[in-house]
Length: 321
Image (cartoon, rainbow, N blue to C red; front, side, top):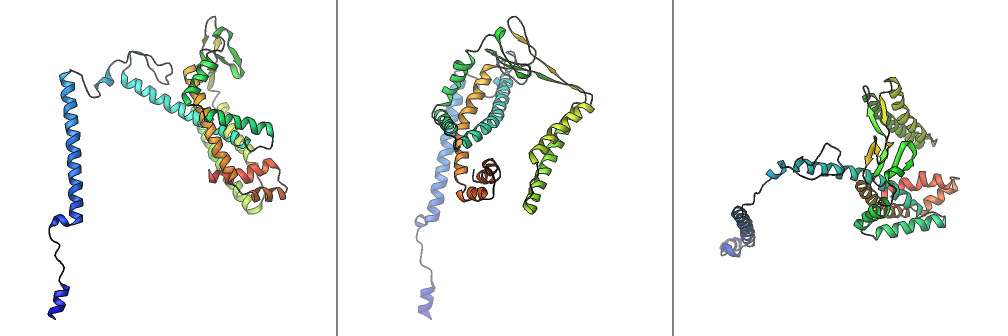
C-alpha cells in the first residue's frame, strides 16, 4: 500500500518559472505593457512638440473655410464651404463614380469575356487585344489617356458634337437633359418598384414552370413591359409631372441641362475600361469551367448557339464566377 501511495503522488513542478503556461502569460503581459508604454511615449512627444511649435491638432479644422473649388459636386459647395463639406463632397463623388463604374465595367467585361471565346476570329482577337492592353497599363495612365488624349481634343462648346436625345459632347464635358420633377412624381417611382417586384415574381414562376414542364416563358419581354410600362402608365395618370431641361447652345457655352465635367468622365471611363479587362478574364474562366459535355448535350437537343450560351453555359458559369 505504501508503494502505491508513493506512485500516486504527483511529481513536484519546481519553480513557477519553469511552468510554460506561466511563462507564456508573463511574456504576453510584458509585451502589452511595453507596447502601451511606447505608444504613450510617442503620443506625449508629439503633443509636446506640437504645443511648442504652436501647431493646432484635432478635428477643429473641419469647420474652417476650405478656400478651393471642386469641379464636380452633387451637393451645394463653394470655396466658402468648410473642409468637412469638401470631404463630404469627395465621398459622394467617390460613391457615384464607383456605382456607375461597377455597372459599366460589369457590362463591358461580360461582353468582352464572351467575345474572347467567340468562334469569329476577328471578334475573338479584338477582345483579346482589349484585355491585354488595358490589363497591362496602369490605371493612372489610362486616366491621362482619356483626359488628355480623348476629351481634351474634342471641339469647343460652339462646335459641340450633337448626340441623340438632345445631348452634346465637347471639351467641357458631356451635357444631357436634366429631369425636372413635378407634383405627383412619386407615383412614377412607386410604379417602377412595383414593376421590378412583379418582374422578379414572373421570372421566378417562369423558372418553376420550365423546371416542371419544360415550357419556356418570354420572361425578358414581359419583365421589360412591366418595368417600363407601369412607370409610363403612372406618368400619364399623374398628369405628366415630369419634364426635361434640355441643354442649349449659345455663343461661347451651353446653357441648361446637366453637365458632367471631363475630370469625372475621364475617371469614370478609365476605371470602367480598366476593371472590365479583369472582369472579362473572370467571365472567360467561368465559361471555360463549364463542362464541354453540357454544350454538346444542348446542341444534341437542337438548341442554337445563342440559346446554349444563354440557357446552359452562362447560368452555370455564373455559379463558378
